Amino acid sequence: MKQKPTNVFASLIVLVACVIATNAQGTLKAGVGKADITPPIGTPLAGYGARAAKPSTGVHDPCEARALVIDNGAEKLAFVAVDHLGFDHGMVERIRAIASQATHIPSDHIFVMSSHTHSGGGAFMEMLPPLAMILAGKFDPKVRSFYEQRTAEAIIAADKNLKAARIAFGAGEARGISRFRSTWPPNGPIDPEVGVIRVDSADSGKPMAVMMNFAAHPTVLGSENMTFSADYVGYARRAVERLIGGEVLAIFANGAQGTVAPRAFQGDDQWQKAENVGTILAAEVFKVVLMIKPQDAVAIKLTRSPLPLKFVPPPGFPPGLAYPPTYDSEVSAVSFDNKFAFVTIPGELSSILNIQVKERGRMLGFEKTFLLGLTNDALGYIISEDEYRHKTYESTISLFGSNFGSFITNEAFASLEKLRPAAAAEKK
Image (cartoon, rainbow, N blue to C red):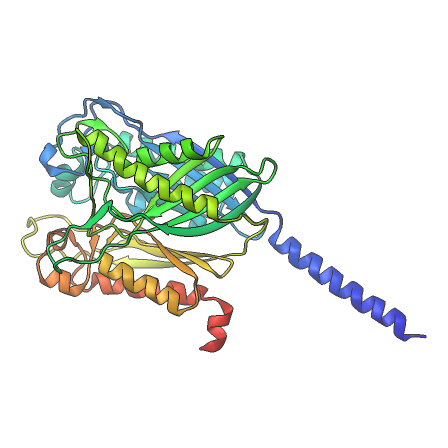
């Protein structure tokens, strides 16, 4: 007679445990927001020394910060992509401070991803003045603060727009629109993979955000362009939004594009070529969006590794520069459902090292590993010892020594190891 109540009690315990587990993850919510980060006309553009820091003459298409906030009830994070050459770590920390105070998103859960367009705003570099002047023009603290404030506003807007959501992950390949640009090795590798995060509104069932990850310099527009533009990135975003329709916000995250240039073709001028590259990328993104099925919940794990660094100027670098004694940066990683990993790289990783990181992710049990280049910092080129030794162009702006590429790659390996799927951990 006493056995039945005991079974009922045991069943209740199981039921309560299930409810607690469900609540620990909670209902998935997401929000999007954007802000215009185009500086005043007359501000120099950043990226090409051949421009000689001349003032900009207009705006072809606005430079923007586009944010996606994801909250699964246990973890809340923000991805924000900026049309910019590269925000340094000081700028990222300032953005995090502003946004975190307003949204209560932990600072290390905010990921600032620079597209690396060479037609974005300059005047932001305060370290290494001679190099800064060449790449971005004369430093203006008000312009730097403008970039920081507007980017934080995009995150804050996304957080205010949080609503019930569904999410999916997938990948495709956009071939023919990128090429290996370095001088060594001959015919070096590229990565045509396109990573996609699709976020739908749970109410309407329609996409509210699509984040695409692809590796190629946004340099279809050359140094002769003097107007602000997101380059092929802007065309890709607009094409994705046009193909999907509705209120979707397209977000671009560059990959390991250190040694990868766009392959621009079929166009009467640089604008048509940029549009062609962007449209081809968008078509592949749209195909992936149609193939993947969103789910109501997702498990999220994060890890962050602070990096104290020391400058090591390459041979032939201008002498007499005032280098800080140390420089703080980071490598971080996020995993979703123990299947999809995103590793942040604080600069421009070579495609050779990119392959190594993705292979390590596969060995650890992830279905896909994606790299978010120029995220949370912009430390220049991150290349292998062999690339450095062969004195490639990238080695001339590799500011932390010949073994810096191996160091960052190992940090990426360690981040993936911390997040590795349970099944892979059990087999080890």
